[in-house]
Length: 221
Image 1 (spheres, rainbow, N blue to C red):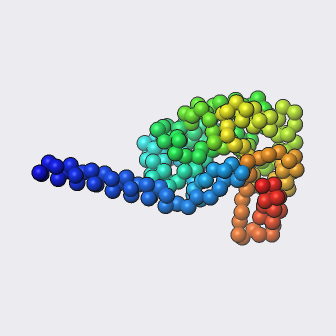
Image 2: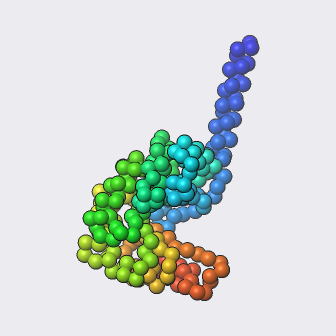
Image 3: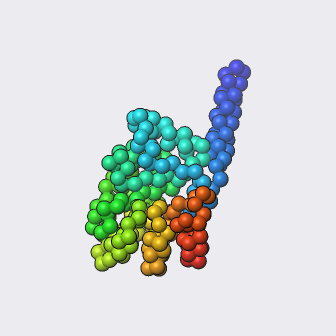
C-alpha cells in the first residue's frame, strides 16, 4: 500500500508539474510576426546580450528559463560578439530548436549576394540548425545601402536563393536611423516578410518611423 501510494503521489506531482510548465509557457502573449503567419512572444531573447553572459552554462540556463517562461522568439546576428552569440545560442537550443522562432541577420558588410550567402552558412553552423525561421539584412542605415542591396549581385539575391534552398523560411531587413532609407527599401516592392524598425513614444514627429514607415507597411500587407 505504501509503495502504491508513493507511486501515485509521484505520478500526480509529475503531472501537476507538467501542467504548470505548460501554463507557464503560455503566460506571455503572442502576436503575428509580420507577414510570416508565425505567432511570436511579445518579448524576445536577444543574442547580443546572451553573448554577454558570464559563460556558456549561464547562457544555457538563460535560454532554458526563457523558453519555460513562454518566450519563443530568439534573435541574433552574424557579428554579435564575433560569432560567440550565435554559437552559444545554438548550443543552448539543442533539443529545443523546434520550440522557437529563430532569427539571425547578415551584418553590414554583407551587402553582396556571395558574402551574404557565406555568412548564412556560418550562421547555420554556429546555430546548429539546417534552417532559419527568419533571416534579415541588418542595419540598413547608410544612404547607399538600398542601392547596394538591390544592385545586380546584391544581398537581395541572397534572400531569394536562401529561400529557394530551404535554408530560410522568411526574410526581412532592419534599420534604426532614418525613415527615408526604409522607404527607399520598400520602394522596390520586394515581398519582405518582416521589417524591423524603432518606435519611440518620445520621438513621434522627428524622423518618425511610426508616421512615415508604418502606413507603408500596413498598405503592403
